[in-house]
Image 1: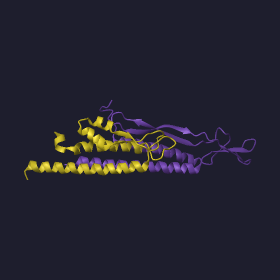
Image 2: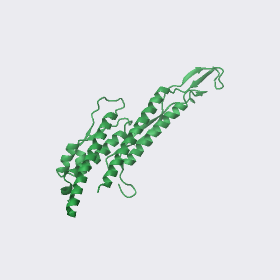
Image 3: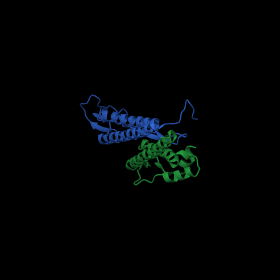
Image 4: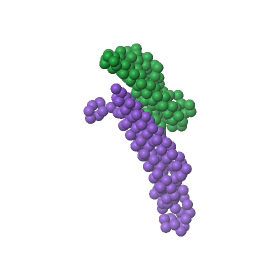
Length: 115
Length: 138
């Protein structure tokens, strides 16, 4: 039901939310020795989700380790610039998806009211 | 297992833990700076710099990885022997032991900790804003 109402945007918002958690984890572990940064391949996760996979499964299959531009001595692969850029991009995309959802809800509400 | 008493981790808890960890690190650097140049009578008593060591902590329910302070270690740098016969703590040879704190290193450590702390605050406030927007959606 909710799928047909929100279409692709409902799934997209969930994955954007998950990705925000992953990127926040990276930022939190910027100084942890041996920590390997990871990220969600959004396109792959969305495709898996639309293909009928559960949210957890879709995110799991699309999670990748980040390849650092320069490796550090303590084995940590978090690079602040990369993480910040990815976080900002994700936040903007989240907002955009939310905007689409909001538009959809408004449209349906108007139709229900018969205006 | 998640339940009412043990809810899955939220982004705010993650931010809180990361900020606490950075605060411990900052306190360690501040202690080191405060003890820079302090003097002891023997090599064993001399102050040695503290270092916080972080470790990642996985929340199995959400898959988020938070951070905890694994240990606070004393670095094994040898104290510097100085010949000061007039010093009240000097031994029979007239030597005292000065703590081996590198001020530059501590300042860099502090700067890095504060930057990462600020980054976390920024990420948390963005996440909060997006959550509020989602909540207010009509």
